[in-house]
Amino acid sequence: MAAPPHETRPAGPGRALPDTQQGMRRRNLARVMHTVSAEGPLSRAAVASHIGLTRAAVSTLVDELIRSGLLEELGPERPGRVGRPGSALAVSGRGPAGIGAEVGVDHLAVYAVDLRGEVRARAVRHVANRGRSPEPVVGELSALIRRVVADAEREGLWPAGLAVAVPGLVAGDARTVVRAPNLGWHRTDLGALLPAGYPLAVDNEANFGALAELWLGEGTPRDFLHVSAEIGIGGAVVVDGRLLRGTRGFAGELGHVPVRPEGPPCACGGRGCLEQYAGEEAVLRAAGLEPGGDRVGLLAARATEGDEAVRRALSEAGRALGIALTGAVNLLDPEAVVLGGELAGVAPWLLPSLEAELAGRTALPAVPVSVSRLGPEGPLLGAAHSVVRGVLDDPAAVAERG
Image 1 (cartoon, one colour):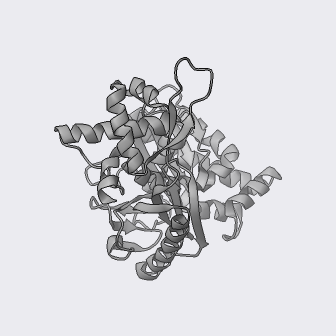
Image 2 (cartoon, rainbow, N blue to C red):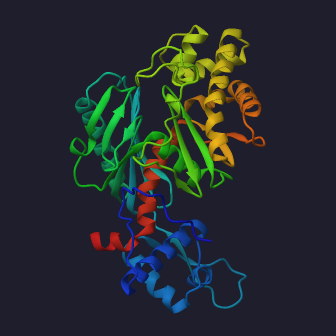
Image 3 (cartoon, one colour):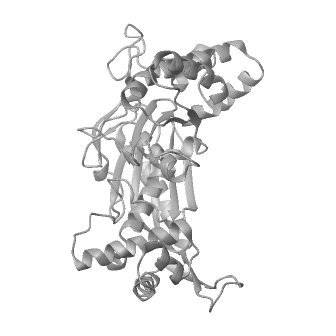
């Protein structure tokens, strides 16, 4: 069965298709691409069987996709099948690629992902971005983007679009960062600062992390709460395979849910927010450790060695996460909660208290809590894959662009 259309706000060429003969052709091209991407390698006959079109119709569509460089023929199918073997089709390892970038509080990163979902080029720079103005930060990110694009081009790829994950609220124009408290940015138009020439989408890092979990996670349901826990804490809600964005696109600000209303002030302007108790820096302070280096690795190592201060800090962080999640679970009744981000690396010491709070505070049956295998790469992978899925949704646009 072909994969479902990708989430809204694509950075690639995907767009709503009109209900006309031309629109039907474009939709059928997308159905072929999604089917081969999800189930391939497949013969033309197998594709026709999957999507319910005649083999002749599918052959015409396939020929167009091969000419566009989006599909390739691998040669005859495996022996042993009845009848004349068909030529196996696969998504091309050359051609369009999704460029995903991330602005973190302490790092910048860029990936290039091909249509097969493979990371073909990458660049990461560890740098403290808190308190820096957007211009130099985005300038450094742009240099990384150019380097990754050049590396991808040497692999026979070209950028179909750019998607950027940021730790903050993003306006409906998918380019303006309205507020990023942990960076100190307000009303920042990233579209004016990033390299021109690529379709662009900017989104909250937790949203991209949730989409990565939906598309790449193993056994992830179509209804879940995603928690991205790092220096800041983000949240995203996926309902029936789509992000729940809210009226202004700001849904999911879990890190600024107050867990202790009279607690310490937060960069957002509130008090006692979840980030003040479960963010990486808060956990390190509570454990008596200094920030810097491999923070999560240090926490995990100390917890494994039996350091009681570290274990207590992680348990308290899990308790705060559980309290913050209680309201969302009671309100939304998700099928699961998925913990991602850096703090997924210390899940063994977070989860017991988190799950205990959820069990004791929710009126619903126990909601399973799982740990993302994507870890801190989730937002970056989600950003790059959002471009790739835009190509799969409207491959005809790639042919027109070429």
